[in-house]
Amino acid sequence: MHQNFLQLLAEGNGKVKLKTQKLRAYMKAKGWDDAELARRMRAHRSTVSKLFSLDRDPGQKTIARLLEACKEGLDFYDLFFFDETVRERNSDEDRTNTKAS
Image (cartoon, rainbow, N blue to C red; front, side, top):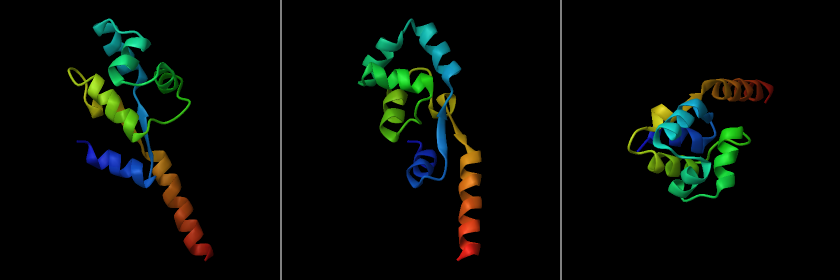
């Protein structure tokens, strides 16, 4: 589906971040509250709360369920962005560790 982002996430090369304002606007247009989104995602409401509070980065399962819940109006690129700064920081650390060896 969104193989390139999910592959990078699985490899730990960066972080996929939720566009919370975009999701909130979509939910408002649909008349959904957090509980309804959780129901449509087949997830616990605490999962939705954590997404919006940014307590954690969404995992592949959460990403897939959110995409399924919003499939009638939003796609991966509408809901998420890839945090390149994490990837760059990891690359810098790898180069430093290689030089030190």
